[in-house]
Image (cartoon, rainbow, N blue to C red):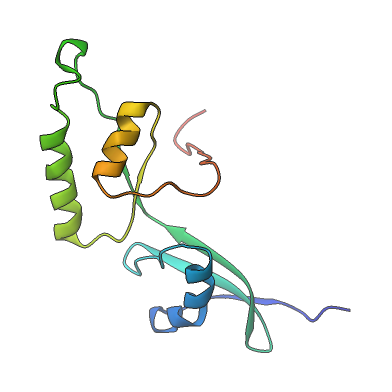
Length: 125
């Protein structure tokens, strides 16, 4: 029979307890001001780990068809990148729905995530 798993929220000074799990999966540790980590433990050993994060999402963005393909995206994206760096956020999501958006993601230094993004809107149907 398996031991009983006890779940608890980690205090920020305990995030190092799961740092190796995050590193091995190429994940960033949550910003403690914007999220937390729930772990399951058996005799002090972490056997489960779940994070909740308030991660910024870039978008939607729109440019009139007549002004596309001229680099108009660059200035607002540089401004957004500067803002993110200045406020110290440790993560951002951009959903690349087309090749142009994928180009912007690369320009911003984002890397392709593993898997598929799933969404749930708790504000409506």
